[in-house]
Length: 153
DNA sequence: GCCAACGTTGGC
DNA sequence: GCCAACGTTGGC
Image (cartoon, rainbow, N blue to C red; front, side, top):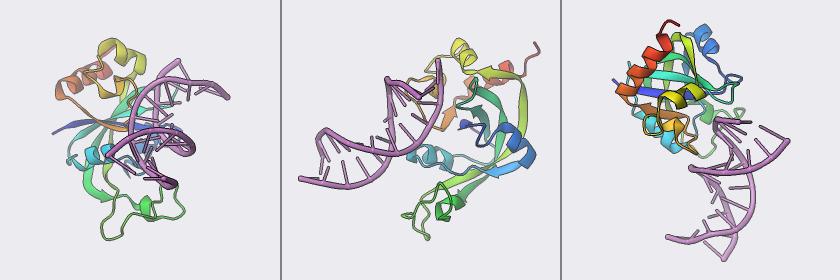
C-alpha cells in the first residue's frame, strides 16, 4: 500500500465536493510524470488531499484509491477544457484513478505547518519549483502527517 | 496581479 | 537535438 498527495484548487474541486460526491474520477491530469504516478497507484492506496491556490494552501483530508486503470473521459470530450485531440481512442493517453472520500482532518495542515514539520526531502511538494499535482508520500512521513492531522488540540 | 519555475511546442 | 517562445502552476 502506498501514500500519495493529490492537489486540487478548491474552487475547482474541494474536499467538500468529494465528500458530497463520495467518489470521483481524478480527471484533468495532463502532465506525464503525474500521470505515471497515477498509473502506479493501487486500489487501497491513500491520497492526502491538498488545496492549492487556496488561502492558505494545505492538506485538508484523506481519500482512498477506489479504482485504477481508469480512462480519463475528458480527453475525448471536445467541450472539455482537458480535451486532447491527439489522444488515440484505441490507446488513450491519459489514464487516471477513482478516489473515494475518507475523511476531512480535524487539523488543517497548512503549507506553513508542513514547512515547519518537514523538509524538502520529506515531502516533494516542499521542493522549490515543484508543481506536480500527484506525488508519492513516504510511509513514515504519511504516518507523521496522519498523527498531526488527527491529534487533539 | 506578479512572477519564478517548469513543461511543452515547434522552427531550424 | 537544440533552444527560444510560450503556457501553466501555484505561492505570495
